[in-house]
Length: 207
Image (tube, rainbow, N blue to C red; front, side, top):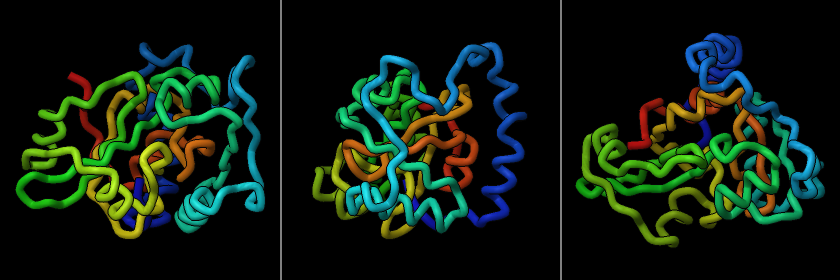
């Protein structure tokens, strides 16, 4: 979740490349999701800017600044956890993007870990990718780094760039859903576009 690291050409290229990227995951994703919520999902609608909480408006502005679709969905149900988000949207659990903030134990520098909702991040793999041991910071640190409270942290739109890694399992989905700065707001995005927009390194995160 962060703003500014990708130029518009990179994002556009990611859009063009997303179909070929997904081919490598065809065996796992043949039946997987579209952006439309499944029937039986909680009440959800694509919200206009006036209907959005202030924190979600900041995410919308960040998406627009990156020339991405700012399709923020306002949900009646909470999306504080990945299962809640999947139930509210009506998608598979794995298509939910969990945004976890870590801190380098050696440098103190923050890191953003974007994990499939079906997975639990292996901290050893994250540490290897970042080149240093990691620790979990408190809620105050998370808010200082991202500008958002835990439960609604978006993958972009932060005050400053944050080094980011993205779970390769998210690429198995045509569309993933990420928090939009508020527990009742999410947005859909192609995972390859998300990786480009956040400058993320795509790695295996599940043990």
